[in-house]
Length: 574
Image (cartoon, rainbow, N blue to C red; front, top):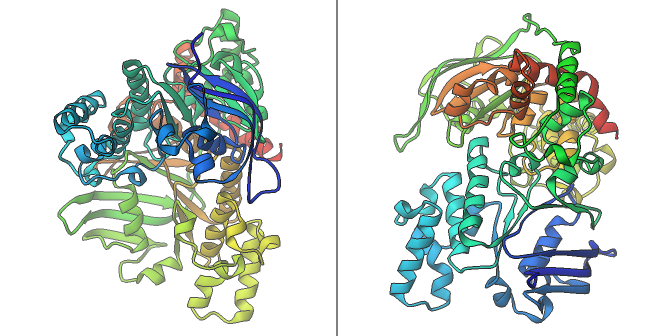
């Protein structure tokens, strides 16, 4: 076998700022043309491993290294960052953070310009690479004019133009809608076929990555590699569930039905899955024995919009005749493709933007005359990135900020802040600096600061983005408890699993219009809506078809109800 591109041998790493190592006894190789998925819970060492591969360790992050790490047979600690970058390219999760050019062509050409490539040769290579990612018609466009998926293609082209041996993708699906995410995985697959480069994908969304072939999955836990095997082998064991990683939904459904998963069933994809007659009978029996809950129709309408339209100053009409309602005590998902109008709708409801047409009422009262501050007392908004909301050093002060700015008496502030911090599981940390918290805990701080104002509704933008399954579950179970306490929750999300598992109902946006208002199960089994809104059909639907279940939609609904009533609560206790 040829020399591996990357070889870890008894490798360990400890940051200078930490007392214990982050990586222990790492042993694995990556060869030319391989496709490797690295998975594991947050804090397991994935990012540190990636930084070792792309040279950020030891050049940007200092620490103590043990063992050996070679790149094309040479010890990386003896190479410069420039040397590493000629063999390893990284596509960041946030494409905007990677752009350096004013146009697509300039951005792709950046590495070639640094290598002083002749102008004629540079133009040829830029055009050839842009064609590989289907962006050759956008060379004169500014990166800011592109969609999320197009930005990712340009980022890939900027790496591929240098003919690297290995490309790292850091959570490539985190900011993409389901359909664009599916296209991104297909693009990575096609790019790898054309270039022959090795590919490493670091991603929480395992089922989405396995839309295309992966040679190996490296599963990490507490700084160690706990599994390095084929997807079929990994999905046949309990490694994923034991590590708090979400299994593909069809695998979970098969296990609920009592089906034993084995590698020869080829379970890594619903398209390759092979079930015997006995397995199919078990799935059908489980379906017949599982009850479907009946929805309640007596909820009170809390928020209602009627004919709401909005156009930005540049003439772009973002919302067309939005008529919908939110029921009191509901958990509602708002979904749709990037640019569909979801965020604009949230801004209009919160008063950050003013609708030109239509009405918005809360408990039957028109809220258009209310200022942003007055609306914030009724409707709280939690941004996707908590760091963009936090402005105080200490947790207590951040939770109290809204009350302080409203001139609430100190005694009342203390009572309210104590209450919300206890609800959010943060009271024991009240005197801690916010900087000492994890991302998920920071998210709770921002929620606490909104809860202190006692709103009727909380709107959350991508509440679980970038979270592993365990932290995802913690956040969503926390939101479920808030919902049970009387807070109505609206979640703007790309996560179809979240919509299925937690939302009572979903509203689907496409092109600034509402195209569906239904349960998650009904939406993700309607191919017309899926296509229009760039969603992705659930693998549960395909499993139902495979098992010849008469109503695949009903199968999805029963799976969701079974998850909610018998399984979901148990996961948080594990």
